Image (tube, rainbow, N blue to C red; front, side, top):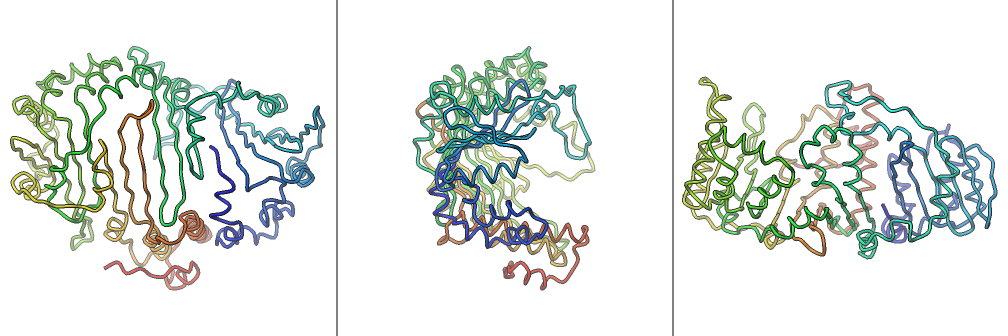
Length: 516
């Protein structure tokens, strides 16, 4: 991750961070070390030039992994004093004015111009998908833990500090291209490397799943603007997946399908245009064609039927949120697909009926309804809504659709509508305080993408806030300060958070938001 220190500092000066409620709670701790307190008072007391570029990276290797922070020095004396105190170590001088100070967990190396701080992370040796805990379970580890290997921090720091440019990530065109884009924060993630180091993938070696992630890299840029956060993300893949992306790139979303939506109150919207043949080629590339054909055959259709049936246009909406007399949230769910071949699509419908028969109880009321025309097949949770989509040629328009209409993929989530339809119990004052902070903060998110451009698939994401006049970074600082303060109150109360809501509102300086 690369951070544009000059831009970030101009958008969120440190003096404003110090007004953050959680920051003030931490700063008021009388037990805090004096050197750390000086750094919180002004980060430049660390000797680091915070108004210049900073780079953070994580590297996994045979000894587990390490985390490194790199940047420029503003004051060598302050840097030396701060990290000598932080590590409780002694300064070791090297060649060309290079110095270092360390303990068994970290090392800081610097000269008069720049620095690198390396933190050992041996626990990364045991991070994999198969060792991730699942909710409600203490552990589901299927892999033996690897022994912790001691790291030579001095050697690692020297390697990073003295690395030649042609041996670094800078030679990667995807990375150098990323840094040329304008933004406040850049990030780069080697998904292919993460996939290759997951031991559980070995169990799936009978398939060609490695082709799906080998060479995969995700890059992105985030920019904090007044009232919104913009992100541009690009997904790169290996040679074979890249060829699939190029050959089977979708075109723009079907506007007619959107106009048919029988509601103005949209909570969630997702639409996609794709080439069905591309899904078949994807299954083949992954080595799953045999399994897929076996499952499809059991239900009475083939993969070719699936490709022939679909036009490659789908739509999903959640709308008309409400609460019944018991307080339970209700909504309209709708999924629509454009039909290419009606006979082939009929096989898919019959397969769906067959799959659903085993899970349907005679005493259970029907919860899924469908209808179809020559052009569309629709599934929903209410028959009237499904029928309306099919039979009524509405001409609804939506402001958000103008921003996604020209792309193969579009997404919209109306945070305001969702939150106002799900008001927490007013007697839970801390939960209500967090809710009010969120209602005053988040407006919606709009995302589009799916186009293949200059070697990768691109996406653009826009997170819109309620206050359109204040920079989003300043708003995030205030918002997380409020939430941090609320969380601290929760912990101090040991989970017994039933108290007068008025006092909490005054403490957190959140005005009650009308929700009716």
